[in-house]
Image (cartoon, rainbow, N blue to C red; front, side, top):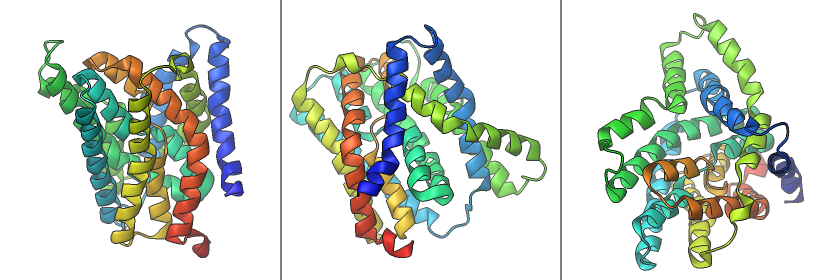
Amino acid sequence: MFDISLTILPIFLLLLFGALLQSRRFPADGFWPGVDKLVYWILFPSMLFYNISKADLSSLVLPSYAVILGLSLFVVSMLALVISLTNRVNRPTGTSILQASIRFNSFIALALASAIYGEEGLILATLGAAILIPIVNVVLVVTMVSLHGNKNSKSLSSLLIKELVKNPLILSIAAGVLVNVADIGEYVFLLTDLTGLLARATLPLVLLAVGASLRMSELKSSPQLLVLSTCARLIGFPLCIGIGATLLGLGPLEACVAVLFGAVPTATSGYALATQLGGNASILSVFISVQTGLTLVTLPITVWFSQVWFGYNSVL
């Protein structure tokens, strides 16, 4: 487990370095929001497109992989609902609990998959992100609009169109699948070569930007909700994935990579969605910061346990 911790540590050092740079306003005020836009609109979509266009979508393990991730997401969503109902929280706080429980930081998941499991792990993690990103967006938008009302005079369908059809991550996933399935990579080789170059530049810059976006000053209130939502995210989610992978007989590498999506903290982008659609953004910022800090301890344990449970070391 010590070797796993050493592998993971540089990723969290980059997060901390990003937070330090932001606190010092280096290199300039307004720089990191610009990086966030670059990552969201260019770099991460390029990585998704490139890896999906090269992945083996005919793999027999892919349906089981998708079912496990999708069902685990559903189970944890129900758990988040139970937490909200039993604590009688208001609707904005309830949807923030839902975000903290099911939204995952795909940047950290892909960085970990690459660092721990190499190129094959990165491809599997990219496919996992391609499966979960559209589902998470649909669940959150539908839930938040339904519970918070129509404050912005936008229909549910128009918001879904904005979140899905105009979402660069989802568009890049769709484009990557199209190029892969149609087997036209040789005709768009300039595009794949360009996105490949951008993909290689993505993860280090992304991790710095994630660290810069953390609101460490918000660590304060709601200890009970914080504990429950964090347990749902960092214990419940990987446990569901692990049980599903065991029951469906997923391979060691596929199972270990799948567990990463449950083991990483919730995404910092949830704060923007909470602000846009009427969630409790303040409490969500606490969840994000605490989960990110805790995963420095919990991730090595979860990764080590999943490798032992699924016998990953025996196939190295």
